[in-house]
Image (cartoon, rainbow, N blue to C red):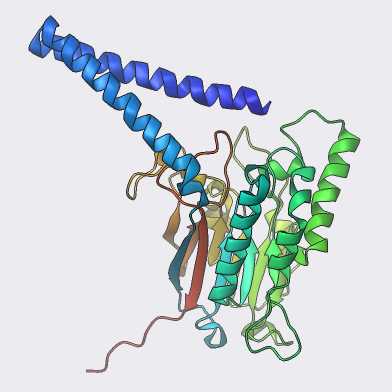
Length: 353
């Protein structure tokens, strides 16, 4: 299944090059004549092949082992005063089969170090720990446990930064041949690996968070909600947002939803809920970005970064993390693995006249 997917990607790339090449050739022939059309055609083709080869090699050996720590302020008047400045570290789409050998272990440890240096209040993982099946995560138990046991700065009792996670479309072993019993066992193994690492997996459920980790009334907390994968066809849907919302008491003034696929924001979150902030992954920016543009926009209107829409009586926001690993060829062109640091903030006071 994996190699068929790779073959389809390579075939699509070759077809795209052939189509572009033919468009250039016939355009030049109509404008400049047959002789110059051949000269321009072969020059263009050779240049295109060299550019693609250099970009692919750079994306394989350099960019995919870089780390982009982004900082984004999420401003809302609904953020409780006690959460003004609350920092969320988000990672997504680890796809651990990408990280083989010593180089992979070193990179994941650098990722954990980068998160520790930021000292967030919580860490969230928005799905796709693996690509095909749970055993891809087993060689990385140590790195996952490191992430789950990062000490909180200034905590005298050894308190750790909590890690909350959800499942993505690749975490259900849907892309490999298994019996129903084997698939259930595979998902259970994946869930157990996260639990052993100290992560709290949210499966269609919500919890209340206080700013200092102590018990507090709902009106001084924020709600953190996690749903299983909810995706557009052909991606699977296992999530149940109404069920997750029903697990929460009434009263939290601000809510954060973890949902793997960003299409869930427009399909259900915006039209049916007042959720303030949704955090997603899934797109990887299709592992290609040129400046601030990615071909991912052809499939996902929201593919990377912060988005906002006015919903009812307040603004609802979405942040899409472009992922750590990837699917298909081990290449990230122009889009380095991302650690997102999101800071909840109340609007600044207007200047006095």
